[in-house]
Length: 130
Length: 130
DNA sequence: GCTTGACCTTCCAGTCACTGGAACCCTTAT
DNA sequence: ATAAGGGTTCCAGTGACTGGAAGGTCAAGC
Image 1 (cartoon, rainbow over the protein chains, first blue to last red):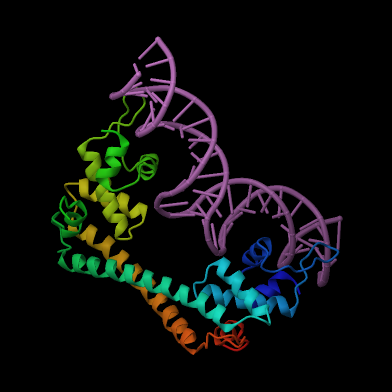
Image 2: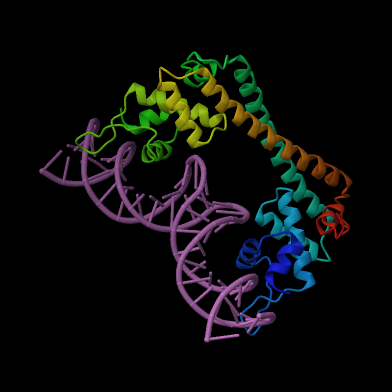
């Protein structure tokens, strides 16, 4: 299977697949012409990676997850801990964004949005207090 | 005023201040020794930028905001639109993260986290359906 | 005057996970 | 023979810094 077929079937762009090979996440052999020769297994791995990335896992986490997936002697505790840590990170990001959102929303609502220059948004950014 | 004083008073690291000069957000003059000479105005601008960045505005948005702030003939409508667009982006990010969080949380909860290898998290990532 | 240490300067490289583009090779059909 | 549509590599850029090296400057103490 050539790279564009794999791209279609895994949902990842060819560039990304080459990049993943570059950093050692997949290692397809090469044909006589230098083309990468993918198998179903590669497609499966790449789709796995795509899903893990969609969950927001970092590349290094994805590498670990893939390793665990392929390791018959893994424990679900290892996977769970990784996922839990990541979940906590996501929750942290959400909190931070939610705080931004709340403040910004208040400011936006209190801004007239007309032709006059007075603006509580700019006033807050310029705030000498706080 | 030298850069480390400004750093302390604006809350931005010296590296960041130099970077902001590099991309033209502030333009302190230089002394005979080549040191940057900052004034209160620079401190104020940098603190403004720090707050805008804390709200998640991109550097380019910050540039625009600073421009609007310094433009006496601005309209609050311009500011409001920028802020509203950014608010929408934040909300979009929150939704995406919340979706990740929900799915991941469910998976984490359904994972035994013991010595056995069976793991719904890995099973989901490997899912051939979906 | 000399040294020491804390500043300041510039410039280069690295972060993260790709992505775009150039230049070039391979395959297949016409 | 040629043209289209694959494939390949390598280099550079993204955003917003950050770390580090190499070197100039300043103030204080001896």
